[in-house]
Each structure stands twice: as C-alpha cells, then as structure tokens.
Length: 288
Image (tube, rainbow, N blue to C red):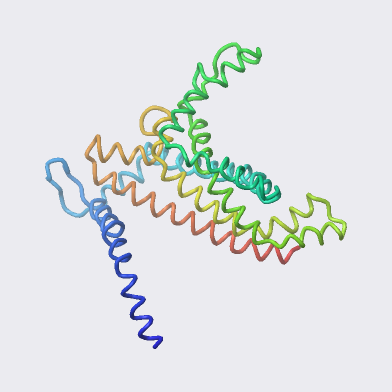
C-alpha cells in the first residue's frame, strides 16, 4: 500500500512538474545555450560555441561595476529591512488582537499598490520640487534642492518600501512561535527588556531573520521597475543592463550571460544566508 500511495503521489505531482519544466527549466536552458553563442541574433547569424561572452563580461570594468553596485544595493536593502522590520514585527506581535489586523494591513499596503505607481509616488517625494526638498527649504535647513532622485539612494528607498513587508511577515511568523512565558520568566529572573530581546527573543528569531533576508535579497537583486524609474539614467542595475542587451542591442549572448551570472551569484548568496542563520540559531541559543 505505501508503494501504491507513493506511485499515485508522483502522478499527482506530474502536472506541476510539467509546468516547472515548461516555464522554468526550458527558458533557463535557452539562456545557457545563448550564453555560449555569439553573433548577430537579430539576423540569426550566430557563430559557434564560445566562452567569449563570459570573458567579455567578467573582464569589462563597466559590467563588473554594475554587478558590484547591484549586489551592494541589494545587501544594503536587506540590512535596512532587518533593522526597520524587527521593531515593526515586535509591535504587531505585542499589540492587542484588535489592533493586529489594522497594523498588518498597514505594513502590507506597499503590496496593494502597483510597483510602477509606488515608484512614481517616490518621484513626488524625492524630486527637486518634492515633499522632502520643499519641507527642508521651508524650514531653512537648505537653500537649494538636494539631489535625492535618480540616485542609488533613491533605489534603496524604493526597494525598502517594496520588500519591507516580506521581512516583517517573516519575523512576525517567527515571533508567534515563541512561548510568551519565556519573556515573563526572564523578567522574573531580573532581566530588563533589552536583555530579554538580546538573549532570549532574538536568538529564537534567527530563522525568521534568515527567511526574511532571503526574500528581501532575492526580490531586491531581481528588481527592474524601481531601479529603472528611480535610479540614474542608463543601465544602473544588472536587470536594466540585461534588458538593454536583449531589447535594445540584440546582444542576446551577453544578456544571457549576465542573467546566468545573476542567477548563480544570487543562489550563492542565498545559500550563504541560509547556512549562516542555521548556524547562528543553535549557537546563540546555546550561549544564552
């Protein structure tokens, strides 16, 4: 009977596996194939298999600069969402049940608006005539507008606004699994709130931090709309660079190479985050 059950389970998974094969594995195989080809893809005059695309991308300071900038911005966004997400998650976790749903909806509100609309909304706030510059000029802090829009800072702000809910929800889910009696027991033993958070609650939140960091980093490094709308002109993110090579330049070989490098690098970073958090959790719990 167990063998028959497993057999039927495999057949029930077949439609999902076919969809994954059709819409994920096949495009990735095409990217892999194009990355080893060179020539004019617009006319179909494609040459033999070569490593020229990889050598070109990995030896060109222009491409390397954009790749490094993309990773740095994505890491900064992940760290900012950690710092900002923990207090929000703690607030949602601590408030009475009546206020929990409204606060959760408020945190999720960036996901209820189109990413394009929210990005253009930040133009109104960060522009030279935007809310921030007008307020600072009105208060006499500055005499002329500060360049906030079309900068790397604007990309960070826009991405944090979009991905913060994923960090908060991951942390709330992790906090919900903690027994409330642990905080009370620590308080009865003389620990103040800071020590309770640092020595009791935070080690138990490590899995939620790891899950949130994985989501926010993956979403940040693969974002296209926010860097394209809020960032400097021209290709400023690896995704905008991939788009330019595919759509504008018809350099499908270079674009495929960049896409695969992005995928492999992101997977390595995500695995590193998972490995780090999996080791930190037991280590910190043992230390406490």
